Amino acid sequence: MFEFERPRGGERALLVHINFTENNDQDALAEFIELVRSADVEDVDIVVGSRHSPSSKAFVGKGKLEQIAALVRQHDIDVVLFNHALTPSQERNLETELQCRVLDRTGLILDIFAQRAHSFEGKLQVELAQLKHLATRLVRGWTHLERQKGGIGLRGPGETQLETDRRLLGKRIKYLNQRLEKVARQREQSRQARNKAEIPTLSLVGYTNAGKSTLFNALTRADAYAADQLFATLDPTLRRLQIDDQLSVIMADTVGFIRHLPHDLVAAFRSTLQETREADLILHVIDCVDENRQDKIEAVNLVLQEVGAEETPQLLIYNKIDLADYEPRIDRDEQGKAIRIWLSAKDGRGFDDFRSVIMEYFSADTVSCEIHLQAAEGMIRSRLYEEKLVQRESYGEDGSTVLSLKISPLQIKKLCRQLQIPAQRFHIPKGELAGAA
Image 1: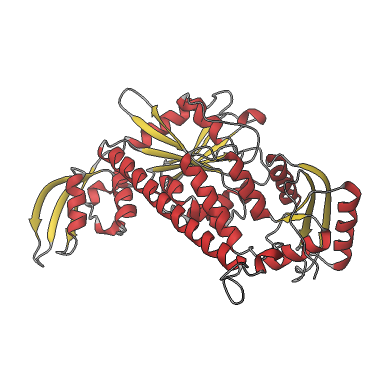
Image 2: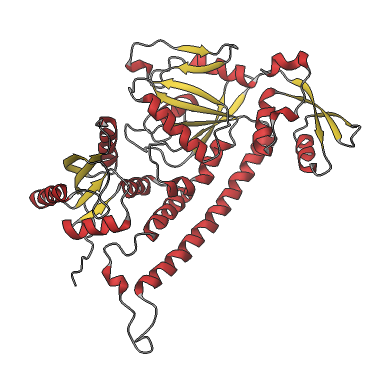
């Protein structure tokens, strides 16, 4: 039986991009090339093709496979990179036919993240995502794993190498999950301390390479790594930003998002992205000169939805106006609320507008309201007292506890999100509604 032993390393790459729609998605191909270069791999050649649907055996058809194999031999290719998700059997069949390493889009992104991870938590998260991805691919290319162990007392029926590796892999995944749970508890303690100190938190999110870290450094005078490459920032960074003499906020710079971000990666980084879900305001940074910015906005919102942050208030930051003929400005909705800010993280234009909007957002007047609680809702009552929002306590005719509160609309939104209660529970008198808008 033919055996394929996987080669180590691999720097010379052949890229494969197949279109499954009538329109050629040049933006997806350009992004794939950037991903490859971010992985420090030399893209020797690109194979582009079209199909109605992937082949179940080798993803591409017989003719395209022969073309790829010829290029692999011609250019002495080390690794073939597909801009698609491949099944384990497809990867194994391709490696057998091409006699070189094959990596799909998910594996490529995981490799980039492994290079970028520097913090202890980041390394744990990336390793967990890699092992979960590897767990489905143990049989791909490692035919020796199907052999049973030999030796005295181990001959005959027994545990195969593949079963052993699966068991060890499972133990390592369990260990990593336990360590990450401990880190998540530590993060939660830090969040609770910030909540008690009543310091608002802003979370920077956006499509990768939109300029988040450049904006973060310019505003907070931090030294977070920023470069013109995909996933330049991986480890989250938190810094205090003084808006004016009375208001300071915590800014969190997070990992950039991308279309078709591997699910295992999102799951592994859930504790890090918790900073986004628990933030008081999400600053969604957008490259204003990108022709496909609307598609990328939607891709970011999909990831936010996956981590449970879709209800967190958003402020759109249109960055890089220095690359176009745009002036700094603030766009408002019909109620006069700021929804978009146009600025340049590179030259600082629009920063005054940014500070004024943040002051406006977090300096909202408080309103008086009431909330009726049942006997089983002691946790909500405790939280409202902990936040020092209760002015008076009484009892309703139905036996419920009535708490009179002095609270800002921002705090209402935050408590509704964290306690998972509808905003309608907070009864605001009609005269106060204007302040809560």
